[in-house]
Amino acid sequence: MTYDFFADKADKLKILEFIFNETDLHVYDLGSPYGQEICQYKTVDEISLKFDLEIDEFGTTFQLWTLRHKGKPFFRKVDIDPKRCNGHTFRYATEGWGLIQLYFGGIKNNELKRSHIGHINEKGALKWEDTNNVKGLVSSWDWLEIQATSRKLKYQIHNKLAIRKIGSFGVLSGADKLVTQGIKLR
Image (cartoon, rainbow, N blue to C red; front, side, top):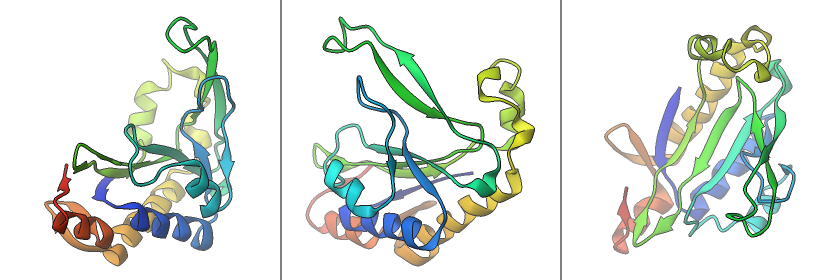
């Protein structure tokens, strides 16, 4: 399941409030900054104090998981070239077959980039299981629960928070207001 939508900072905060207050999802960094470990976030404030949810050139990216999904996320150490990364030699990535990605697009050059939720499905994961044995068995995940969780997130964003659509993309109220200020939705 994948779903793209447009959200400004206030919209993103509403989505995070829903995740923290209405779900049992754990929120992790998709990838850590150079030389640091992955953070797990437990409140909206932790995220809003750490990230610029309005103007973020590369977007703000998270992995979502709950015990109901059965399988477990793992934190893979990634070696990096210190010559290209200010002397840093590693970072971490949060990985797992059934994790749900949450990407928040930011504003750059007067354009608001799309935000996104999504996850691989069981069939897709099975195609890669033999070549990526680090992630464990695809069958250890509860794919029905993963789908139910992602549908709940999509429903909240698409049916409760979006005020209009551009094609299949939801436009949340704050993003819609940005259009009146000359910001383009991309």
